[in-house]
Amino acid sequence: MSKISVGILGATGMVGQTIVQLMEKHPWFEVTELAASDRSAGLKYGDAMVNRWNASAEMPDYAKSLRIKECKPNLDCDIVLSALDSGVAKEIEEDFAKSGYAVSSNAKNHRMDPDVPLLIPEINAEHVGLIKKQRKDRGWKGFIVTDPNCSTIHMCLALKPLFDSFGIEKVMVTTMQALSGAGYPGVPSMDIVDNVIPFISDEEEKVETEPLKIFGRLSDGAIRQARMWISAQCNRVAVRHGHTECVSVKLSKKANRDEIIDAFEGFVPTKSAALPSSPKHPVVYMKQDNRPQPKLDVNLGGGMVSVVGRLRPCSILDYKFVVLGHNLVRGAAGAAILNAELLKSAGYVR
Ligand SMILES: NC(=O)c1ccc[n+]([C@@H]2O[C@H](COP(=O)([O-])OP(=O)(O)OC[C@H]3O[C@@H](n4cnc5c(N)ncnc54)[C@H](OP(=O)(O)O)[C@@H]3O)[C@@H](O)[C@H]2O)c1
Image (cartoon, rainbow, N blue to C red; front, side):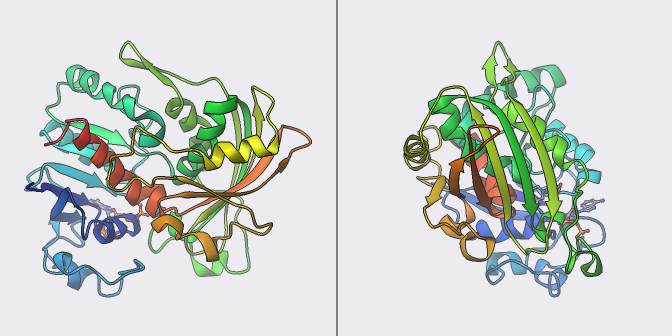
């Protein structure tokens, strides 16, 4: 099978370099283009990243000699994975979609557009059905799909088995989010060492609204949002990778603790089963009292799973638990790759 050619927009950033790393041996895709700002354009990737390569593995050989281009829609590829700063992503992604490219984005700009799929393939793969309307209404040859905010993704993966088995009415979540979630160079060290910052711009709004679209139903070319109430408090903490979230839920149907753990452990999604980056068990339940922890558990399942633990009764809602997930892998780069795989398997890219 000949591989589908892929370009990475924002290839020099924290998410972009994680995509570069994860794409090294991809069975369906081959990276042919890397692009970033005019600060990086013209340099070989290996040279541009000498002091910026932060990914956990060595830089793949294929990327070292690729010359970084500007983010203009003249790249030699069929699909672009966008890891662009949200300050510039909107227009650049639209230019690519207008010019016929399939765009799988990490940026926040188009997530809540009614005609743009906000995808977690294990939950709402059928939302790709919005693409037809998007192209028709906007007159675009290409299209945009997005992945959710990094905290949203892990919370929604943990909620999905409960949503299916018992229904969900209310969610309260407090996040402790890693430094790499703020990009590079991110939060100044003098601000975060020995500290917790109880504010991340726009984050609480994203965590409270995106799940309603993700768990919504596609009907007559539109998403009918799910009915649940979510309250979020988001904090930046001095952890390198991995967002930890303390979640309380009110279920629609009564359930005991064993039934909830069975739901977590028995969650084997079918819609995404054939996709190369899809974990067989996207939710891993840890029984130890003091887990999950970012330092110990963030790389479980190659960073593509949400790690849940500490399930116990909540005296205000029904149950509470902790979920941990890799913000750069499943929370961003791996999510955009998984969405691209979904687009291929559904016939939107060939
Ligand atoms: N970090 C996370 O955990 C995470 C999780 C989920 C979603 N996201 C989203 O993913 C995107 C990337 O995040 P990040 O953490 O990787 O940010 P980052 O480290 O700051 O990287 C930003 C990238 O955008 C490029 N860029 C900036 N200005 C540009 C311009 N005018 N034209 C073209 N390219 C430009 C940068 O290129 P230069 O190097 O050339 O400046 C760099 O490649 C953001 O939208 C972010 O909100 C991040």
